[in-house]
Length: 194
Image (cartoon, rainbow, N blue to C red; front, side):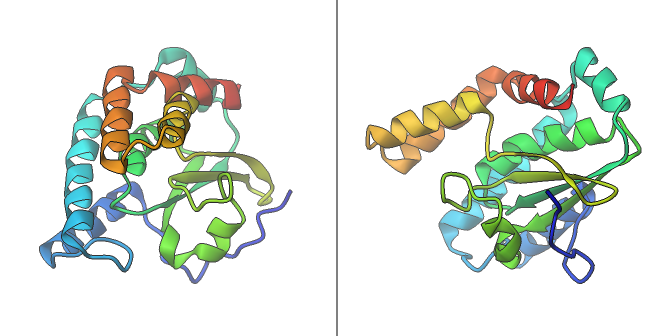
């Protein structure tokens, strides 16, 4: 299947320029998207802390590293927003993976600026992020991933069914991320990429 969207005239970010954008918005008491409420700003600020920590601590498994290093050139397009906790937990890992192969180009795009793309890659009918869309040099779809590892997604679905309040649900998911230390994500990418 072909990736049918042209990215030429869209705002695209490297991981560094995405982080710079978030910092610049914070200086103006804003976040990405249109909702600049105190709650969204707090989520965004917490996510900066998460990304900084993962930038320092995330180490890619050796067997996964070998697979990534042998991949042909491809583009990893990631739909995201600064306030998204799952994005903060996963994008640092994904970009560290991509850095292992000069042929993998990562482009982050904001979900709310790119709803036409997001609508083609919904999760259970929802605009869940982060969403990674991998395409080859001919713009053929290689795979998609997101919005969170299956282990975290299973817990999310279970807690949602139980009617758990969002703040408690979020704490449980982020606690699981902390305990997991990137294992579930790396295991999924190992399976996807090998």
